[in-house]
Length: 346
Image (tube, rainbow, N blue to C red; front, side, top):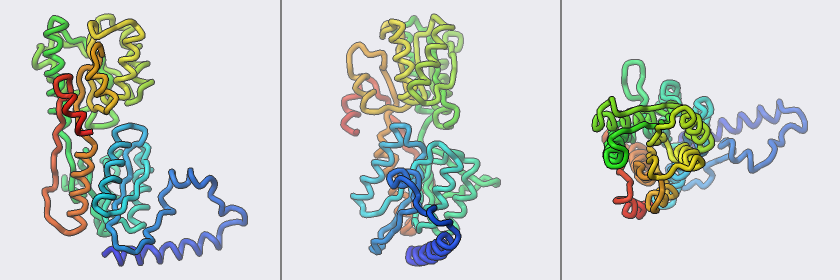
């Protein structure tokens, strides 16, 4: 199958090259800065080694976020360990760009594609196109189904986002009982563009209300856009209108760090508020470990775990081996009692 795809790809490239050279005006064939072209397009990448390696395409969700940088780094490390080839490119949280990247990867003869869809509702057609061409698609985080509710990909690496958020909410409720007389007035830096983040937010608030009672939980929710600067601005706006905020929850570490900076600029300390976030990273884990930090808890999911599970699924799918369609990967609570051990996993 891979030999046939490579032969078909070569034929297409030859035909397209002839068309381009016949139609392009003189002086227009210089594509510009080579470094920028390499970053923005994968069209120039060719499998020329002829060694029959499995080729996996990765149209990354958004390399503007540290989690996805670590995630694709882990896939590339696994490629070195397991002997497959990786073609990766940044979708930049652009659904149309992600679809184009997938089409390029199909044309290049990828054997599998690992995908966290920017738009699960709009990527089904190209997933079916890939599967029909013999390219196995493994989804990460989010499932994709057709109009009849049938799975369109070969496998899914799922995450327990709602239950994860709920677990963190219960932790925050215990903290509020000990430090804030059982009252939780939360600045929520939401990120509704990503369903897992929204599920985690809803779980967090449910965990709080379940432990403290709905009457003791106040949530002021604004979109932190998963960015540090935006998280700071939004938190400043929330604090200006609400002088009783004693808790911060962010959909990722970037916006949460911005929120913490806004609180600290007002002179707030760990005696005044606690900060919680959905994901974590090594820098935040150091803050959790330190004395005096407002940042007390996150949920830990090493990118290596997600990447390894997705790669294992992809290789099995390409080789025709059987596996469960969905494998759910659990998070772990990261606070001062667990952070040292979890840092060893990074």
